[in-house]
Length: 207
Ligand SMILES: [Fe+2]
Ligand SMILES: [Fe+2]
Image (cartoon, rainbow, N blue to C red; front, side, top):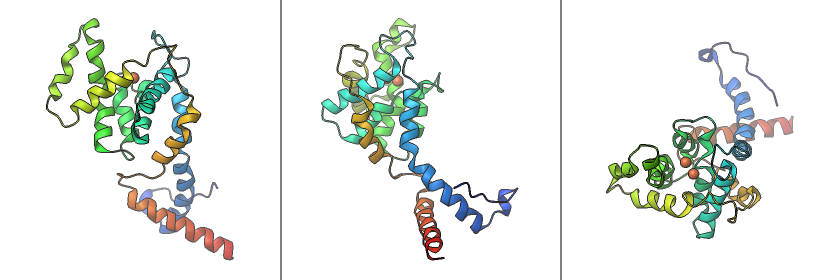
């Protein structure tokens, strides 16, 4: 650990440098689920005027999806759909979508990315906005999926008395969904990094 490359400009980096960086990158990448779960917990105690805090809302949305028999990728999307609330004050759904993008289907990604507008159906009219803003997506392949997500899982997840499973229930799913990216410019590189790390480890073991 803490093996460092020595270049001062990236253009001068060498394959040996990238072997060192790869050795650090892989353990870091594997800890992504831990960082995500820790970051979601930042929302604990953050009520923002809502009846339940944002951590409870997140766990309850995922609980609702799980109890309805949705698959684990969907449940994980439900769990993290509002993780952007801390930094994406004006676009929290974009933050969640960016985090999930390498790991989930196009349908689930679209659902998370657009849930902010669809959820607006239930309250935009109270704040001077058009509750039918979602109608701009009428006919879209994922309209019904996203409307249903809000209707069945996100919209009702503000109930302090409703079942709210703890993070430990979702942790194995989180680790599986974030184990390997499906869509990333680094996908090939990650396989290569695996080889580099394996090679480094093997040579270090032999010598
Ligand atoms: Fe949201
Ligand atoms: Fe939500």
